[in-house]
Image (cartoon, rainbow, N blue to C red):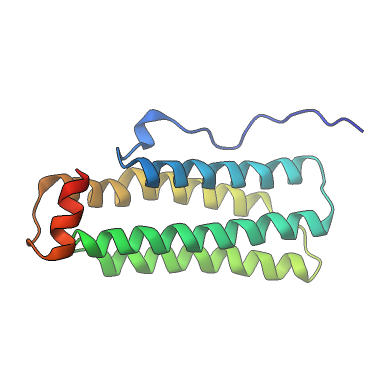
Length: 152
């Protein structure tokens, strides 16, 4: 059975780039996972597939956010607590939807629109803030600080 390809829900644009290659690649992967979920909804994928997509999104998001938080600590980002709280809210939203799917509910389009809008806004606003902080050089010369300074 051949299924038609669906236009992606979210497409990477240069304006999303932070200039931090590893983080930019992780953001692109998050977009790809969300597009898989979108394809699943459009093509009425079975429940097991949708749960698998949500589990993948949950795992990858937690991994990405953990790496991002380590980076923010390393550059002594002053707004880290607020940023981490936003990460927790996003992951909780995914987890709640995964639980609903495991209970037999269909994955909603509203979830995908929320995830897309949240992620795009988070990259353009919140992540850009730590990128600016990173490039400003406003941090101590601790061992970690010197290590991250060499990455610039």
